[in-house]
Length: 272
Image (cartoon, rainbow, N blue to C red; front, side, top):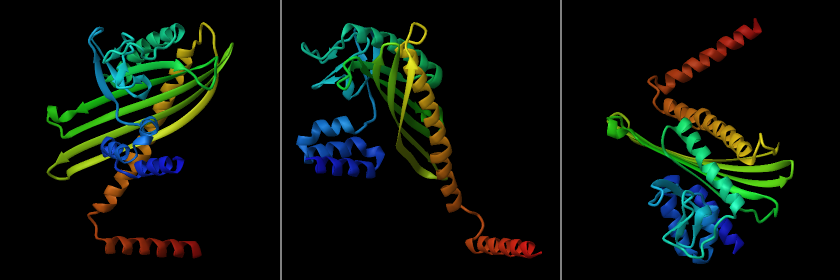
């Protein structure tokens, strides 16, 4: 069973990110016994639901799912209704409510739109700790404004908190899924998509001035800045370099001749 799961996860990493939902559904059809393991291990693009009671949107993921129902962080109720659905204890529910308000402001400041959600649950590894997930989704379709560009940013931050009275250990695992698509007469249809996962672990003091949410927020903010910089400088930069190499206006033979001449000049200067 473990070998099958490892092979399935390895296959998912090699398949196109834009088709992750279809590919995952196909794997579950082939290996129904691994459905729960695959759903919990494979990050999927976040989906949006609407809380009719609180009139607010929220995000769906494995961490707020119980069966076929999903819990809203705003009303703390499941949709479709579930009488025996798992709910966080009072202390974690308070952190959840405050956290959703904080990250709602964070999302608006950094992303200028989109949807965010935060969910808490009791940690299975540490009886004195807890775990939380922060979800952010931003979709943009510039084609409606006459610009041939649309894209989606999904970020998933899972943090495990080991409480040690006056301080706490925070282990953060962050995944960003990005997809961009553009189509013009000059380039045709161009799609760029992928995901990036990074981890971080830090220890912070816990007191009135530095509660858990402040410490978690600081780590999430720093991690998102790092992920943005990595995507911009490495992934976009490499793609640009490759595109420039494929679209050289100078013939390859002329380029090689220039490189050979540069080497000869360099050798002559070195001997001189």
